[in-house]
Length: 499
Image (tube, rainbow, N blue to C red; front, side, top):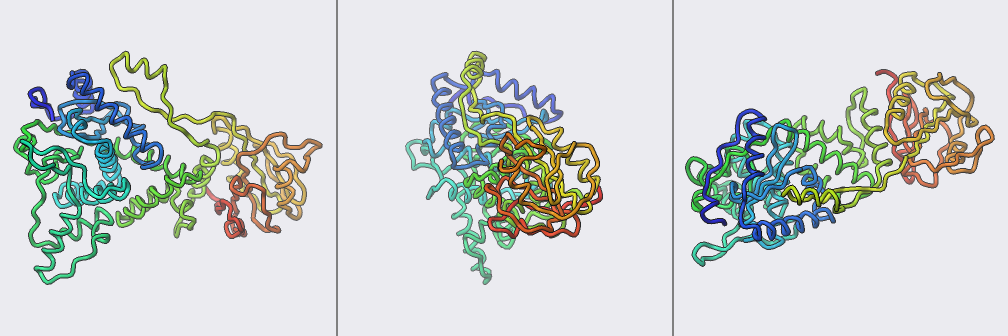
C-alpha cells in the first residue's frame, strides 16, 4: 500500500449528483502515485479485463465496458466500483494495492467488485442493505462464486506487515461457514451443507441469523465499494481503514444508476446467450439460479429479460404485452452479430494524450439485416398485431423488411394495408420462398433473411426449414404452437388479439 501521500483523506462523496460528480472529477485530476507504479497497475488491470472478455466472466466483461472511467487513486485502500448520479459507473483502484497482488489476484478483485454492483442491482431492499449480517452474507456469497468461477482454491493474499505471513484479501467463505457450523452444533441444531449455505446471498443471510454468536471477520482489506457500511463497521473510526491507517472514503452507489446499468448488462448477456455464447449462457443461468429467492421483483425482472426463452421453459403467467417484449428480445438476438474486443487506436491515442486510460471496446461487423415477415391470411388476423409488427420492423435501425401474406399460395403484402382472409394454409411455400426455391410475382427473394417472422394460427402441416434458428413463430389466439414442440424446436410464442 502507499505511504505518505496515501494517508490523505477523501471527503465523503455524498449529496446531490453534481457534488458527487465534482468529487469524481477531483479524483481524476489528482496525481495518484508514481507514474511507473500507475503504469504497472494499469497493465495488470487491462490484462485481467481482457481475460474476462475472452470468456472467464461475461458479466464482468460487459459491466466494465460500461465503467467509462478507470481511475487509479490512493483515496481508496483497495478498489471500488461506484455509480454516480450521471447514469455512469467508474472503477477506482489503488495502484499500490494492485501491485501487491499477482495477475490472478487482480482478476479476483475486479470480479468481486463487478459482482457487488450486480448484487446491489438484484437485492435492493433497504432493510437488508442496512443489516451487517446481510453485508457479510453478500461477501460470503460473492467470494464463494469468485472462487468457483475463477477456479481458485484460496483467496488472494498480500504481503504481511513487517515480514509477517501473507494476509488474505476479503472474507473467506469457508471460515465463516466453519464458525456457523460450530455455533449451530453447540446449540444442538443441524447446519446445512457448505454448498447449500453459500448458494445465494439470502441463504447465507438466513443461516447466519440462526447463529447465537457471530464474530464478523475484521475486514482490513475489504474489497468492497459499498456506501457507509463497510463489512462490519469495525475497521476504524471516522472512515479510517483500521490497521492500515489509510483514509476510507464514503462511496455511494446511486440506486437509479445501478438499476439501469445492471439491467443493461444482464440484457446484453442474455442476448449473447441466446445467440449461442455458451460462456454467457452458463454464467447468466448460474446468476439467475442464485437469485431465485429474491422475491417477485427479481422474478419479473428475469422474465422481462427473456430467461424463460433461454431455459426453454414457458412462463406461468404473462401480461398482455409479454409477447411484444419477447419478440423484441428474440428478434434482437437474431440480428445482432457476435462481438469482439478491440483496441481503438485513434481513440486510445486521444485518451492517452488527455491522461486517461484507454478502454478496450467491443465491435462487430455492421451490415443491413434482412427480416421477412409473413402473415397467414387463412384465419382471423388481429389488426393490432399487424399494426404493431409494421411499426416494430419499420423503426428498427439497419433493417431491410420484406413483407408477405400467404394461405395456400404466397402473395405480396404492402405494410400498412389490411390483411384479408383466404383459403387453406401451406407453410412449405413460405419456406421455399425464404430459401430461394420459389418466386412470388415472377421474382425470387434475392437476399438471405436473417430472421423470418411467421404470424399464423399454426394449423397446417409442420415444416423443417434449413436453418430453424432463424425462424420466429407468432401463434394467434387459439392456435397450434407446434413449432416449439418440433425437432429441432423453433422460437414460438402466442400473441394476443388485444393491446
